Length: 293
Ligand code: FAD
Image (cartoon, rainbow, N blue to C red; front, side):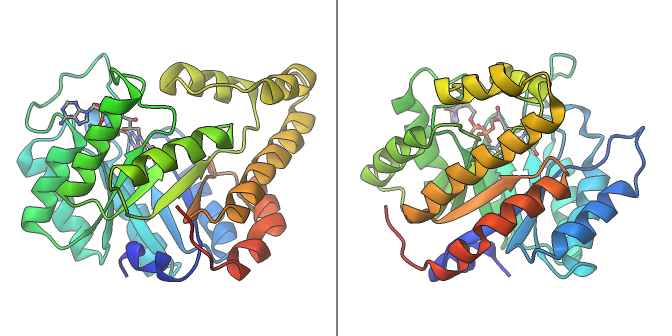
């Protein structure tokens, strides 16, 4: 099923997982998926490490298992910056052969040690390429606080509109820790005619190093409310985990109440954290059918 169809009459809950690192226990991701499957998410997306393309086979395999073993709709992430046209065709053909219908089409994170292929420089080029040859549902990334490399919020919106006009039928945001950024962004994108469903990307912050990495990589703002949480619980892992779950739950309750199209939970492969958040919010999601924005 194309996940864009899910948004027709209700709010959507999706989870994101990443493939295991080459050195780690490969069976752990399947234990995580078993736990996540019990929560009956609308879909699960599987990331793909852009630099070097090492994760391609794993992304294809896990995305296929999500769909064909666990019976959950799956989304395969596909970053293009290091792909040639034939690499892209190879991966897309495999995804199609495995029954996957949804692609999160991305430029990808830039790695200093790998030279871009040159065929695809931006996500819109991959979107055009896929739409010209295949029948996948295309999802694209968006940035409530603007993408870290964008000249301005406005130019970033122009590029976002271009991705939608090129064929993206659904968007997922980068994580944010202050919902006001999301509401401001939503107002601006709707004004320029971006009318596709937009899922709010929420990451429960459960350790200090993780959020420091995200701030550096993505340029997200830490609101003072969140800084106080970090100052108070940053050196106590169990307390920070509980505080991070409570913070993300608060964000989600507010977003659902405001009529968000959907919530995309960056699970960080932590089924326990996803379960706790799910327990607090799933009744709110399934009973609310009002869309705004
Ligand atoms: P683009 O849309 O190409 O935008 C990148 C920058 O270029 C922006 O500043 C934009 O304003 C500008 N731009 C866009 N189009 C043009 C154009 N035509 N001409 C000039 N400038 C342009 N990364 C991974 O490697 N693997 C993953 O699995 C992954 N999953 C992600 C999931 C989500 C939900 C999100 C939000 C991000 C994910 N990322 C992933 C990170 C993403 O790859 C990075 O944020 C990357 O830096 C930008 O990707 P993009 O697709 O948004 O790029």
